[in-house]
Image (cartoon, rainbow over all chains, first blue to last red; front, side, top):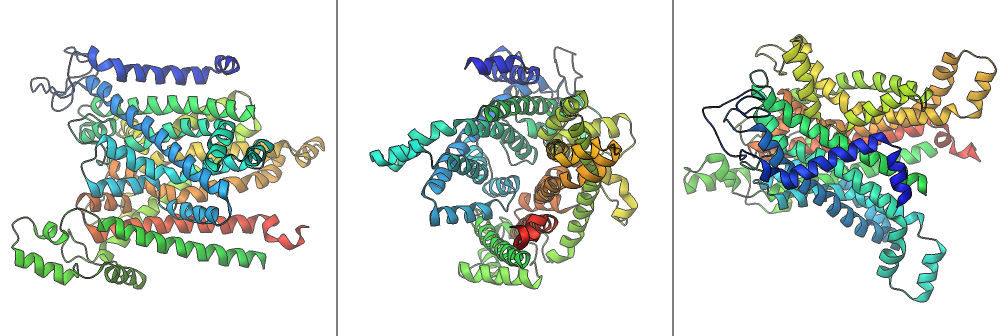
Length: 276
Length: 321
């Protein structure tokens, strides 16, 4: 653990990424209770107030809602969904990918073909169509659908990781001891593939943010009045000349979050891969 | 021979994938809640007219018959009739939009391929030095941005700030795309933002490994001009992984087009797909999604073949041993 911290110290990029991520997590947890405006509070006397005026740090939108409050509230849903999807799709991927790789043969062949077929549709398109068809996305619905869209990719990574240590002596030893398949897969093999798995989860976290923001932007994400960063951008797009802050700040919020996570996940993958 | 075998095998699998996807898409759209005929006619429609429309559309036929009719039409090139725009054959609007998207995708390729290869080579040659660090940081950052975020930044700078490019990509009625080429620039740049990271990183890493090869060191030590060695010897060998990445991302690019086209209001396949979903226009959704899948699968197939063709180890597998 100490070596990780030491390596983190030497990587200013990773520190910056982690710091920004922690700020957003803090904003999501504690932010809303510190705000002076609610995200739904409309103030028709103060429409499109410029940033810094009338106590609105980042200005207000066309309905007089405080942009800063909406961004802070919006961080909650996007972080929650992204965290859940990256965990859920990774767990599903491990279960499916491990089963396929472990048993091999026909199971593996069928698995690979199905994954190839599912990967023939871009995850964003798949999620967009399903969410669009079902309508009225909720946090649960969004999490499940995005996780499903991601699972073919995570399953392939998990399968690859399992194959690297499937034919090792400790696996043979466990098999001879008469351990069950499930025990071998999850108690013997999983801890030894934890590096690639962690790399996958952190990278998946960045993808999830991108995906959820894009779905919100396309109007199939969370429904109003829940503030959603992607939705704020498309809602206010026509105001980009009159009130650019209503579009620009939510965009920058997304940018800062995804870039921060990418910087950190880039570091994680370097550390984990060098170690093996 | 080896090549032909691979070709046949991949082609067979590609066709199988498309078939499986068509089934998946068809059933996915079938589960759409609500009565289609009712949706089309509106809430005030009488029961008889709804029943008549259901009958005319063949909605009461068994599922497999409807699938076969739909898929059969697709193979014959008949995409069916739009639900939302009553009586409009999808064929009459679809291909023009696809054409626009293809032009946009090609413009984006024209921007990002040379740019990313050039910067990737530069970063690879300067491995570990300042230019490398800057290029890989920029790549990492832009790669992470959703297309609409980079689009908004570009709009703010070039359309609102400098006022040199249009804010939205709209073709005025009576004109065509060729008379409005400036509307392509910002959407194509938004895609370039995202793709630059992927391609330049790939180019950099393959360049780094090639530059360490003995034949490159030999060429440099022999006193050949460095530029010549980099572009004639090294790049030739370091391009293969880059080509693969570019090809593999072609289908992904079409997914990204949905976001970009929605942001700019660009009249292409992406915004058509989006409006089909919003208006619950089932035949149009099916046509759009199946077509995107088709491009994705076909791009993967072509890349695979191109890779096999360009890689002598696969092309001449017989003589390899």
